[in-house]
Length: 549
Ligand code: NA7
Image (cartoon, rainbow, N blue to C red; front, side):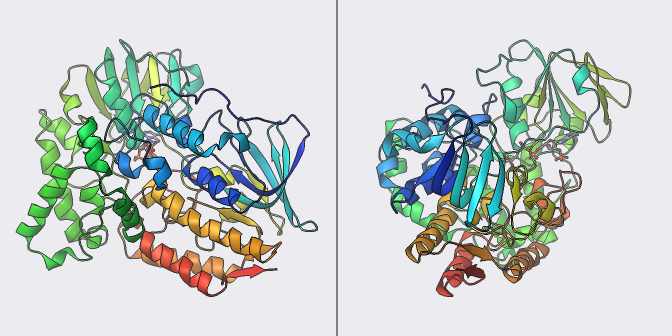
């Protein structure tokens, strides 16, 4: 399967050119493409500015070996029949190459690239009160003057490097996974080190172990990963998956995470221990996120309910690891944090690969990394791990980083980054007081991080589309979230968060992986149905919480 992703397919006006637009969309991932396609139907002038050379958002940047979707393919697409009817993935959980090819299919079908300026990174946006327009500047590309801006920068737009001294002294090659060379990198016969065991780490480790001459995994927190149950899809399997496609898409709006399955109920206490274990067995056998988002909501709220799932998971995993000491590191007797409050990965052979002679796990809580040296990684116990390739799977300034990386100035003289330095507040995870005519999709305080990407991008995206449609139909030239609406949504998010165990983990969900970031749950923990209900309330109130003129 080939992809056009590395070739710029759009056009980019030269320096100094100014584009007058109704709507500027930032980012050409699922959220941004959905907006472009929908807003065109209103006859508005719309363009996407995209920093990458191709479509796909995170799937352009995440091209490290093993980069793969943790959602099963049928639901990892747009719901439009004209798109899904012409598309099949080859594997149940598609690799990034397939997702890129899918974006090419979307582009061909919807003819999107003609309105996308690739290689155009938005660096600055200033609201001009007089003209009620945003003036948006880019890194050497055009300047846009737009009535509305829609920021679709995703939850992984800003990779972070670990705060470990000496990286610049390393004599080998090093890469952050989200800045992986677009033309690939051969892992074979290399001495590879991987720092980080999040979703990305698990994937790149699974690809490295079979081919590296030696692989050292630097683990700070074990990943409580779940079985993916990956499989190749033959024609029969593809046909079977398509049978109830429209029903599956409809289910996305009524399930917590935008999948076709949901929590079995709110309270696990309604079942006996035996019944629960029987259910967990069945969810384990089915694979995917079911043991996370298909059990009971109180598993994410109550220690006892949570511990039962943790122990079930632990005992399953430990059976696969021969060395008891290693088993204790990877699936500890006591949970490192409540189950499911850090993002579980999906794995295929993650635990088994630690039985290989060429793989070594270093617990960096026990042996902290002191520095990167010319030869490799030096830990505090004096051991130096010699490496040819160091892979930094250390994650992102997640959820809000893509927005705060842009110098966005509203009406109050401060940037969005400065405002959110005091903690994120927003109306419906979509708009911010002091930043008129600006909406964001799939970002902070929306369900994004807890939901299947395309589901959340489309379902929140449709509400955003409807709002722009409303503004346009009414000839409105300015809208702004009120301060009260911002504060009230923040309180609503925090209130639900406080009923959950999420607040107990040092996770990117809590912003805890970025020094100085206010600790708060970054995504909406009430689930998609409740989120959409809140939007419906706001709409029925004539867009309550917004001042519209
Ligand atoms: P994550 O989930 O933030 O994982 C980052 C990993 O890197 C995690 O295991 C961290 O350990 C580890 N880390 C970060 N800094 C260090 C240092 N200094 N030393 C050792 N280990 C470190 O990022 P991913 O890219 O895996 O996934 C991001 C999300 O994107 C993913 O969940 C999907 O939703 C899409 P920690 O757990 O903090 O102890």
